[in-house]
Structure formats: structure tokens, C-alpha cells
Length: 396
Image 1 (cartoon, rainbow, N blue to C red):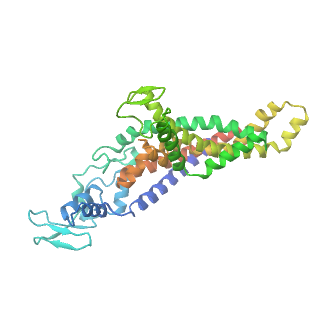
Image 2 (image 1 turned 90 degrees about the horizontal axis):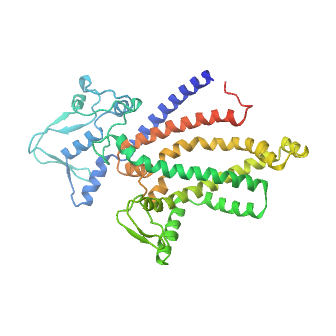
Image 3 (image 1 turned 120 degrees about the vertical axis):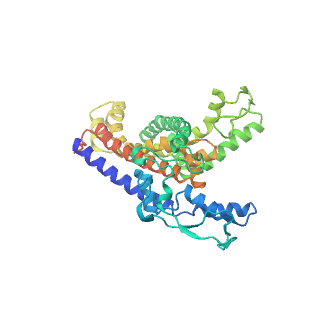
């Protein structure tokens, strides 16, 4: 076991490193924040931005450093200071002299209002910048946009509790409901219950989550409220003002009841989607096991049907289902991107969407690398669980 774990940890490190390199490289292929700044200024009626604005944006996002050095600074915190000979500089800026300004227009034209000069940006200019110790040492840097100047860890920790109890409750409910449904559908194959569950499972697995989210809001929030029935708030995790719900009376904003009512719809949508997929998976695995020789032999010996199902068939049928559990750690942390966005739930999934849309690279990369590490840990735990579910499996 010790040798197996040592090899797996080495493989996990190499996979995480390759994933970090690929994700970091692809992330910086998206349009630069300067292009976004140009678009914002143009939408605001300003048809030009100064070189000083461009310089500040490039410094904030460290776009004035070669990509390999940007990556190593993010990964291990090196280089934290200057490099000899200006190694690493990859752009030019105008002289910082009052009155000497270069203007860049959206069409790419550059106008020199007063003649200036061009000087190379060297790595010595990085001396005054705050550099993280690197994600290898648990430092994800600072937020560049969303919580500008504050550690990324602070931003993640403010959103993590919302994701943990939403995803934790939905996953727990899904497992407790999906496994019995899948087992009973397999045992009562082609029964009315099996047909109903199969139909619901196909619907849940076929439609995207935002469809269920929108339908839930229309049904339990809009239509129920218009009909004078008890309704659920359409979004957010905490209310900002009191409201009245029929049969429940006045619900105080921020109270436990307020939080619970807002929690029901996103949790219900996620639970239904998970049940749809997992119950079908358990049903198929259970049907395969029930047709094996040792199950027929147990029945022929007169073993009680309940014992055959729970002791002989269920345990082996859960071996493929254990594979699905590898993604639970990732789901607990990363949340549900689409569902959280539909219900305006302030979790990690919504944070990822917002950070990606606002070019907050440090936040995006922190979430990506954490998800990669959690997925690798989940796969390792799954491999170990195989030995618990099936004693015939040995890790060597």
C-alpha cells in the first residue's frame, strides 16, 4: 500500500503541474484587459485612453512580464524581484513626464500629444510590487478586480460556506434517495414504478439545469405568488427586506426561515438532477448483478430475497457507483455554476463565472487548480474505496 500511495502522489503532482500549465496558458489567450478597457471607454463615450491607463492595467495584471515568468511567480513566487539586464520585459511605455501623453484609440491609432520618448520596462520595476509566495505554498495571490488588493483566499472563504451547505445537502439527499430508487427499479423491472422513475430520470438527465431553475422560479415563485399561495423567494441566499408569505406570515430578512426558503429551490433542482442520473446508474448496475450466476444460486438455495438483494447483489452493484463519488469533493467545493447563477446564489460557482467575466485571473486560476487537486484526491479515495466494497481488489 505504501508503494502504491507513493506512486500515486507522484502521478498526482505531475498531473496537477501539467493541468496548471495548460490552464494558465489558455487563460491568457483570452482578450487582454486592455481590450476590455477600450471597449468600456468607448461605450462610455470616450474614444481614447492614455498610455498611463494602459500602463496601470498592464502592471495590475502583470502583462508586462513574459508569460513563463508570470507563471513561475504565480506557481512558486519566483522571481520576486528584479532580473539582471531587464530579462523578462516585453513591452514599451512612454516617459512618465508631465504633459507628455500618448493616446491610443479603439481603432489602434496612437497619437502623441507632446513628444515623449520610449524606455523599456525592466524587471527592476517589479521591486515594489507585492508578489505571492506561490500556490505551491498555499498563497493564491491577490484579487485583481473583484476584491482588488485583497487576498484571493479571503474572497473564496466568503463564498465557500454557501456552496458547502448547498452542495452538501443536495448530494446527501441525492445519495439517500437515488440508491433506493435505483435498487427498487431494478428489482421491480418493467413495473409501473420502474416506468415512472425511468421517465423522470430521462427528463432530469436530458434537460440542462437552467431549464429546471427557470421552471422552478416560474412555478414556485411567480405563479404561486400571483395565485395567492405560499411561494418561495426567486433568488439570493439572504433577503434585504421583510416580506409576507401566505400561511407563514411575515418573514424577517436574514432570519433562519428566510434563508431556508431561499435555499429550497436551488437545493431541490440540484437534488432532482443528481437523482435522475444516479438512480439510472444504480438501476443498470443492479440489473447486471442480478443476472449473475451467484445471485441465481443464492435464490436456488432458498436464501431470503431480502438477503439476496441487500447482501449479495447490492454490494457488488455499488462498485461502479463508487466511481461517481470521485467528483463529490470537487462538487462540494466548486458548486454548481449554472444553478448558482440562475438563483443568484453567492457560492463558488457564481464566483467563478463572475471572475471569468471580469478577467480576475488570480481568482479563476485559484479555483481551477483547487478543483484539479480535489479531483485527484477524489480519484485516489475512490480507488481505496474499491478495496472496501470488493475484497477481491488489492492495491499493490
